[in-house]
Image: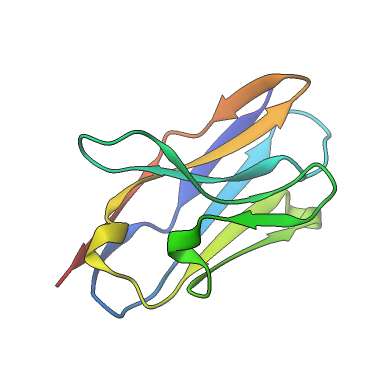
Length: 115
């Protein structure tokens, strides 16, 4: 079992920054195949940034150059640094970990960007 707890969401003005954290617990595993997704009202959940199975990173085109995913293996925590935020970044951000073919999700954290 994997438990994921996100934190760090909030409300900011356009151009601002936020850092999200996702703390994992429950089993011993690598932080590969773990990342951030978001879901805006009326839209499907989409990938924002994630670590691949090989430890590389994937980013949505819409966030490249603005968002950075990072991790602290000792703390079992994955971060998402979000800079130059735009109103279209407004969404609930979820952390996901894939382990042995099962997707585990956190409860989500709201990010609201005002213009």
